[in-house]
Length: 112
Length: 114
Image 1 (cartoon, one colour):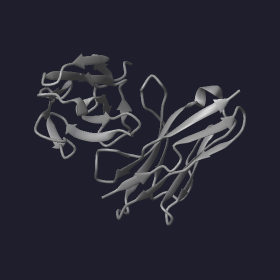
Image 2 (cartoon, helix red, strand yellow):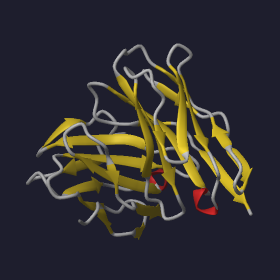
Image 3 (cartoon, rainbow over the protein chains, first blue to last red):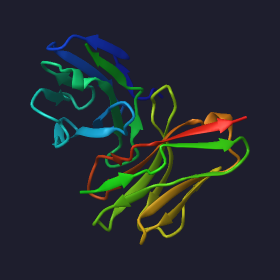
Image 4 (cartoon, chains in turn green, yellow):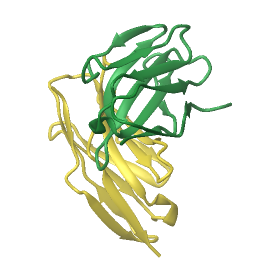
């Protein structure tokens, strides 16, 4: 079956702009995770959904970051008023409840 | 808070030889899981091996095995008969028993020489 997909693959934007990053999880996976990976670092947790609700959003760095998963499947990570420091690869993963996490290929965000 | 430390930013191994990547972690939890992920240039994280903390036996997956030392909070990865396709970033990760998210180390870049 299809794996986790993320769109776009790459996104270039200007400082101050709004961006949306999309994640399509593996069908049937109830849990969905967003991570951010800065250059030369390991991924850092942002937010975790169980179904439609955010089970843990403690990793979101500030209120410019927001994520939704309205139907318990596709999720969108939204970043307002982007800053150069937001440049990173944003990874999405899905899993059966508390099971192995399967990662997507990531979206590379560049803020100019 | 839990932390994961990988002290080797880069490692190199000759094809067909064996290499060991180090990882230490810090936690006060008794129930947790440990993982090694591989990240090639394509960016996609691939699970290599996992270890449940309650299991004393070290996990093995084909050419990959771990040395899990619970008291020392150490979780190293051994790659036997290294292949060119093993070249990648390797990340050690921790997940608490009641948590959903993974906590990653900074990674080790493995090069394989022909």
